[in-house]
Length: 102
Image (cartoon, rainbow, N blue to C red; front, top):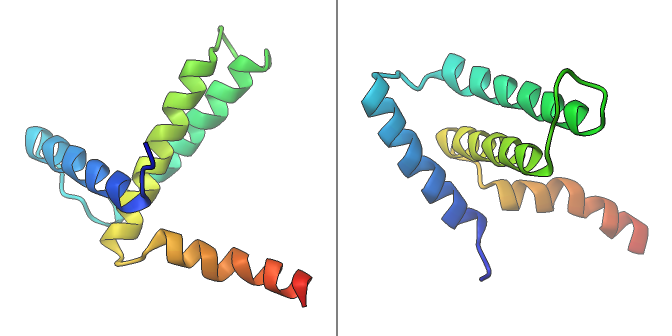
């Protein structure tokens, strides 16, 4: 199955809508930025546990789950700001390949 970023953004948006309605969340800048920061911390914690450098035991599945959460919130933030993350990544990172090939 070839999943597109737009499909993942739609999934994240649908889940975010459910979450916001259920818990009465106002998705403003504070929420988007706070959630991305929170999830990055959880990725860090999951990685450190997996590497034996954090408190408790970690698993690969825990790290994957936290990366998925972080990606979901990055996609939500980009969507909220009207950013196409695939185009932005291609524009920003792709220029390094273009410079290398020139």
